[in-house]
Image 1 (spheres, helix red, strand yellow):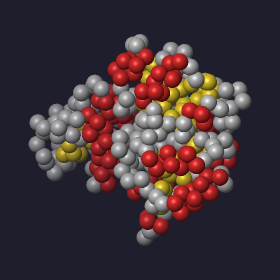
Image 2 (cartoon, helix red, strand yellow; image 1 turned 30 degrees about the vertical axis):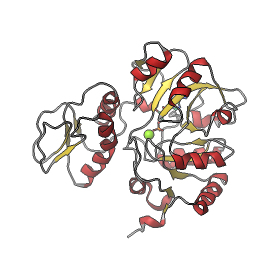
Image 3 (cartoon, rainbow, N blue to C red; image 1 turned 180 degrees about the vertical axis):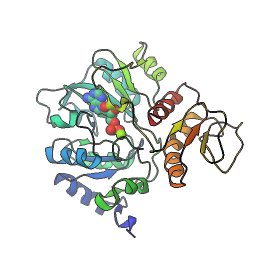
Length: 316
Ligand code: AMP
Ligand code: MG
C-alpha cells in the first residue's frame, strides 16, 4: 500500500524551505488555503503553469486564480481601481477573488489567464499560505487541487486521493470554509461570477450598487461557472423531501431524523457549517459506495446561494 504520509509535509521551517525550493525550480505543490486546497505553481513560469493544467487535466480556456501576499506585489501585474480598493479593504485577505485588468507589462504567464486581458487575483487569509507567499518573489497560480470537474479537496488525504504520490501536499489541517472563493468581476459590469461565502448582500453594502450573480455567459468568463463541475461522480437529485434507504440523503436542519443513510449538513441550520460539510460529505458518501445522492431543499439565501450553485453544477 502506498504510504500517504510520506507525501504529506508538516508545516515547519525545514519544509517551508523545501517547498520554496520546489516552487523556484518550476515545481508544483498542493497547499492549504481557508477555502479549499490548491495546486500551486509560480505564476511567472510557463513550465509550472503547464504542469498545473496537465496534472489537473484542465481545459486550457479555464484561467487560474493568481494568489498574492499583498497589494504591493499585485500592483506590479494588474490595474486596480476605486471599486477594487473598497472591496479589498473590507474582504481581503479572505475568500474572495477579484477579476481585474492585467497590465501590459505583467509577468503573469498568458496561459495562466487563458490569454484573457483580465486576471483573477486573491489574497488568501490562511496563515500557512501567507507565510509562504511572503517569502516568494512571485505570485502563485493556484486552482483547486483536484482533477477537473471533480470535488475540491478540503484536507490532505483528499488531495492524496486525487493525485496519490505524484505531488507533495503541505498539511494545513481541514479547510476552514470548505468551498471555493466568491469570484467578483470588477471589469465592466460588476457582478458575481461564482457565489461563495462572501455574499452578494455583503458586497452590495460596500459598493452601494446592486450585485447580480452573472446570468448565462456567452464567452467563458469564469469556468467555475461551467455547467458540470464540483461533481462527486454519482447522480445528485436536489429539493427532495424523502430518500430511499439505499441512497445517501443529504439533509439540513433539525426536522430530519438521523438514519443510517442520512448526512446532515447542519442540524443548527447554519449555512456556513453546511458549506464546510458539503464536499466532505460528497467524498464520504462516494467512499461508502452509495450510487445516488438525494438532497433536501437548502435555503437559497446568503451562503445558501453558493451551496445551491455547487449542488446544481454537481448534479448536471
Ligand atoms: P478554481 O479552478 O477552482 O481555482 O476556480 C477558479 C475560478 O476563477 C474559475 O471559475 C475561473 O474561471 C475563475 N477565473 C480565474 N481567472 C479569471 C478571469 N480572468 N476571468 C474570469 N474568471 C476567472
Ligand atoms: Mg476548481
